[in-house]
Image 1: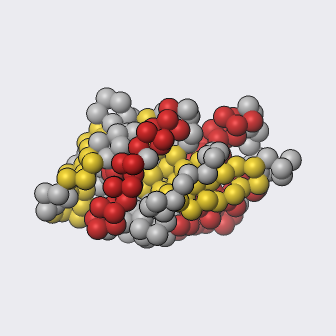
Image 2: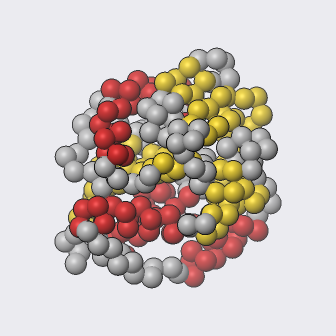
Length: 240
Ligand code: GLN
């Protein structure tokens, strides 16, 4: 059944790709293949058209300067991305793009970057950097393990739910107790690392929702491996 194509859009890989975020696209591609699909990755940088059919959208983090560049382009395609999100296209946005998928990000210098409001969050740049290994507890994906590095402090409105409860680390803001945000099938998170290689349950969520939307069904194949289990265990043991 490898003829079932899934188109993965890698959003702004040129500007928004730090701390190994590109690994999310690689992990997703591998996992989709293991789940019996033919993944096709389309990189969309500022000015590039979206492919005609979009099954999954993945975006990463960046410096404030990179965020400024992509915020303008994101504004131009806001309606298109909102429509895809409303249609159930699963998306994973890390750090800088998590912030820009919210309503706005105000940098620590007071510059306001307008977001596209797919997630009901807003972010204020702070002086305290939240850096280190982080562990979350989630009801849907089990334990999530990653690495955070941000100074933006994010607050959620009623239209988004947190991705998980912080077991170790900071999360959305100092003392927030929660990390990430989710509205429908769109997930925003501060977790780099890369996130997906160590958290296949999240990859399977993205692939499963995409497959159900395009093909009507998804029968997951157990694809966990010792490699993943060892990577999770070793990342979890690392000090903050
Ligand atoms: N500029 C943002 C912050 O520090 C994004 C950081 C990132 O994407 N790693 O909060």
